[in-house]
Image (cartoon, rainbow over all chains, first blue to last red; front, side, top):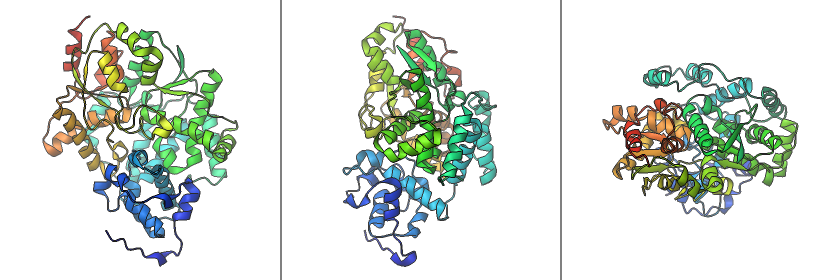
Length: 189
Length: 292
């Protein structure tokens, strides 16, 4: 496979930023492609993990942040488990996601950042997740009102979702954590 | 035997049956589970996908509570297990993360609390032989496919749970109950649950279809799971699979603790069996007919 890199788009390679954020050195990858062979979603994306690594090694810049793997990856950790060099690709993907949001790269359909923000918001407020509020916020945010509504009757009948939030958590500590992360310029919305 | 019990958020919504069956099994075996007072969310996938220090801090907040209790943690949910263990690994191996976590929580934590999955408590601490003696019913050769999913076994450096490619813990529990644990290739495949709410939910249906299809191909009579996300996915998505492909599996998806509860003679209600979407009746009947 030939990989063409347009290096000049930003003039700045992402490789070092990823090393700083995740502590992972991608230079040790020798392209055995075990990660891509085991990847749960590689058959459904344009660039599998080994290709992302190769592009990064060759000096890819911000254009890489629109790669569909970034938001299709399910964090199943098979790549990490099978890498002969022990590359923690999961942390690399986390760093790529954070960079994609920071640099406002186009987020592919499905909007996982919106889901993540809604999830963390309920944790910040209640100390635990509150699925009903989370689903509502996500469905409003993505206008995906009808998706999976066919399962609503069975979910209700089987009481698979809590109608009221849980109030047992130590909310003071949780709120402090969120406040401190924001103060220290963590990647929180 | 006494543990600090971390239920995890799903214990209060989608996985109340995993929660109640674990508590019931522990009680029946005389194992003491003391719920951690004031426990909070581990941060889950949105936590680590958003910020590394946030993810570690949300988990460490719970580890500190357990440390104050002076007990090891027992956890059911594979995702919580993975996040709590990752937090321990982070503070032990990265001093700069430990410092940032300390700043966020207001207390230092050294990564010393032991985190155990329910299956580790049962097999390693309680012991397979003692378990065998406790069962009053048997799976009587029932063909069970053990499905571990991703987060229990990977990454091995962090979870250190069994073999990452061919784990045997759940299989050993099935054998202890007198069931036939099946050799099958998809026990550590990912069901793709994290794409459930996205526009790629088509992928989740196709992953679930191949997993259940493979279990069917090796003539499994049910699939045993240990993760609340896998359970909901495999159980609830069978209606999507039917609509999209016409295949009707009717494959019961039970928590390993529900199967154990049945072999201990516990009631359907305690085990939350009514919460399962695909009826577990064939499994329940097969077990009920086997008083030892």
